[in-house]
Length: 365
Image (cartoon, rainbow, N blue to C red; front, top):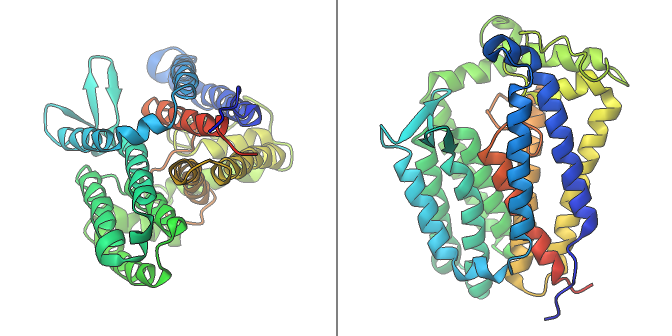
């Protein structure tokens, strides 16, 4: 297996463009809020720059680690991620933010274990399916045990609770198993079971029911549950074709809550308009296409599944986030990869892209 000298430079450029846009938009979207809360309009922008720097360094380092290394330690990685998911549930270790116990903090440093399990589970599933390719068509021997593992991890995430991240985990893993060769008849039964389970999860939490009703008609409660989506649409609408101009958003003046997080795409559409938002979407589309191409040209099944799984997970997160922002689905709390403010999410996503870049070094073009 001959190794290429360089990783796919076109993918590197696209990633760097998205990260740069993220830093610029986090600063623009958060400047008013940061100045009010921390007396420093650069507060979130500087931290996003720091996270991006750490993430890009991680991506560079990981891109030089042979991807088979992750296969060798796939079980250890998975077990470590599961242990972190358990630890975060323990009071005194796990930190509560936004109503969910999702963080483990040490001083000023904190991590989000759910972000680690998203990647760790993809690595393990890619290894297991590549090792036992013929068993994936059997529900009892192949698909069933893997589904039990996926939903076990989903259950740990739901104990936080974090439905949005859990859905990304389950969705990306099931798509990966389908691509790997699992039979469609098994997924029909799974879809029915999953729909019933999702309905139960929504019904068990009043705030989720409120999100559903706010999605159906946000104007029923414009100052409460419908406030975010209404303000998001108020941001997107005036953006028009070319936008109001960078830094000129009106919705970031305490109308759209924490606009540098889940709803940063609203500010992008408001300031950069339809053209700017479309460019962002095209960059994500190219990232998906390039990741799938790298997977197709990978020299083995493990590299193929892992590359495709990573870019599909990122793409699924993009689809859900933007669907929320434009009012197609209820609010889920999912961030926009590379662009939304955050440490664990940005750093782990960039590290994951480092794995894809390493796989591209071995591509059989």
